[in-house]
Image 1 (cartoon, helix red, strand yellow):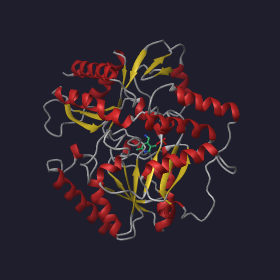
Image 2 (image 1 turned 30 degrees about the vertical axis):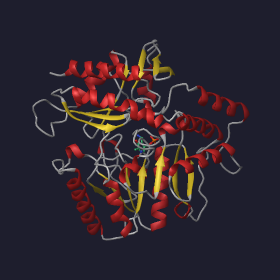
Image 3 (image 1 turned 90 degrees about the vertical axis):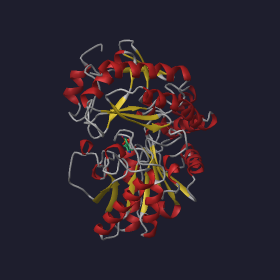
Image 4 (image 1 turned 60 degrees about the vertical axis):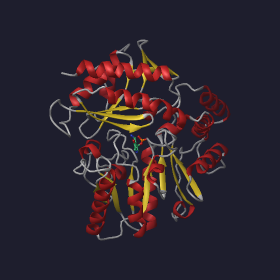
Amino acid sequence: MTDNLLARTRAVLPSWLAIYYQEPIEIERGEGRYVWDADGNRYLDFFGGILTTMTAHALPEVTKAVSDQAGRIIHSSTLYLNRPMVELAEQIAAVSDIPDAKVFLTTSGTEANDTALLLASSLRRSNQILAMRNSYHGRSFSTVAITGNRTWSPTSLSPFQVYYVHGSQRYRSPFAHLSDGEFIAACVADLKEVLDQAGGDVAALIAEPIQGVGGFTSGPDGLLGAFAEVLRERGILWISDEVQTGWGRTGEHFWGWESHGATPDIVTFAKGIGNGLSMGGVIARAEVMDCLTANSISTFGGSPLTSAGALANLRYVLDHDLQANAARHGPTLLDGLRALGSSIVGDVRGKGLMIGVELVRPGTGTPGEPAPELATAVLEACKRRGLLIGKGGLHGNALRIAPLLTLTAEEAAEGLAILVAAIEEVTP
Ligand code: PMP
């Protein structure tokens, strides 16, 4: 770092802003799957794919769309007709598979989930929400209220009555020993019991198909579809939070919910769609989206600038079939990490380019004792070798690996070799 930027950060920004690394990195520029820091060090980016940049850093198509739009006008999203926003919404509705879909664009995932909660609670006239244990849905008052991971939920005050159910954190679940079918049956029984105890009219269930901040963890395929059946019988809506799983990341499908055999009522998205621009949104059937009876606008959600960039990004994903690329290179990483057989690796899981590795203290059984200190050490060791990855989970002991969707075979091999070396280095 060229000056005391860390001290200046600590002095003027909130203490609760999480910053990685003993010596944090000031990222200065990026190209393709690599970023460079202010000291000129190059890193292969195995986290930016989820953190912000879905396809590639400095993707020329996005840069051109943004700069063309900036040359014309940078403006609000609402009150006047907004061509880029309409074109983006049309494209998103077309790939959504939601019948009669309408799209509302926001500036973030938090605002998207906030909107989904507003829709569901208004339609159902209820403030009761079901959420998954170990979940993360944002940082506003309403979204921290439905965030099951207490590390990321700084207040217990709540606008909602929230009930948490089992299902997403399989490795540490009381049902971990069960087969897929038995696991789903146990979780459905838990859901029914929670609903019976709630007694009232629950508005919605919100769930991430693969939990992001929770450490890239999920239940078996079909779990959320089995939940949806129970919910439908009682008129409860299903909100799928696709902020991390959308746009082909899992390789198998375009959306995470598609592995579950049912269609959600509301879908939220953000992060990667803008390839680094502030963009999120909500998709719902017209009857759900149009249930609000007062005006409600987002000044910058879907602005011409961010919409133009997101549209170029989404077209790139579709034209280059990046979902297939995630399916192509994901197994290299997943199989390579599984083959490692390290005493500190308790669980390797994920799909496509969304892979979690849970680190545990050696010899502590199954599930092993969480080892957040080893996760921190692996992050540092990867950084020294030129690789950026993330971490997460309730205990901060899960490595999160999410390369950009344009990843090449050479880059997958390079990243895997660094990961293996880093894990071996910190193994006691
Ligand atoms: N939902 C999920 C699943 C997320 O991972 C995140 C961000 N980590 C959010 C919502 C909130 O998105 P944002 O940070 O853009 O508000």
